[in-house]
Amino acid sequence: MKKRVTIFAGLLMTAALVCTACSAKAEDASTQTKDTPKKTAQEETPAAAETPADKNDTSNGEFKTEGLKIAYTCQDLTNTYFVEVSRGVQARCDELGIEVNIVDGKADVANQITAFENFISQKLDGIIISPIDETALVPSVKAAQDAGIPVISGNQLVEGSDAFITVPEYEYGFAIGEEAGKWIKEKLDGKAKVAIFDYPELESVIERGNGIQAGILSQAPDADIVARQSANNAEKGMANMENILQANPDVEVLACVNDAGALGAYEAVMAAHKDSDRFFIGGLDATDEALNKIKEGGIYRATVDIQPFESGKLFVDILIKVMQEGPIEETINIPMKVVNASNISDYKE
Image (tube, rainbow, N blue to C red):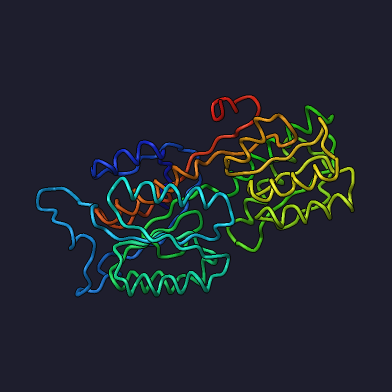
């Protein structure tokens, strides 16, 4: 089994910027092992295909990023997390002189399949994907690699990708669930009616929802989870929370798989005049809007920071590393940090 490694964004991006060839070092020995099957360059790239290495003069030991053309296709730009990731991708490409095409998948895998067809016809130098459907996109990734274009996966893995950068989903969910559980234990005497927003439509995020539930119960085993519904954007979050409050008007805790759904729920709670010093809403991603809500000191109590803007930069750095050195077999983990009233000043002055 291969070791999963945790690479801190700042260090890795610095290394990539000066174009040094370095190996990812393990930062967290307790992280579970996960294999990401890879194919060799000989298996993936036809002999006649032109690769990024062919386009760069490496005789002097330098890898030139200026003039490279890459693409990033994400799940849905109505999700504030992917807006920030895309901003990071764009910013890093601007720094390195790379031309980038950012394509919104609009929550429809057909859009990403079409995008890959276009990327291949454009003979791009590399592709980054945050997939809507990991299984459906396997043939698209292989087709790109057969054309000599390396592909890396961000957030969710498309099997066969040349690298995979992600947050461990279960642990990510557990972090906000645990925070909600602490709130119940410390502020609500260990008992509360609780709602969870998950997103089972995306297979990998199922574990995030499971982590939320486990985190809550780890701190507040007597908590009553009365609803677990799908909501990954503000519109769904608002609609679902309105329904939950009608069916369970005494719900006082909500933990969500992202900030987008949580922010929609926040609006529903405020509109229903259910906000109180007992109410807890927590999300994931540490978007600007969520951080602003925490700073205000209201019912939006916590989020978990995975630095989406910096993650976007990291995606580009890893793609460049793959272009230089070939596939990376170890899963690269993005570090996370709970943000609440105790440390919000580190984020918002």
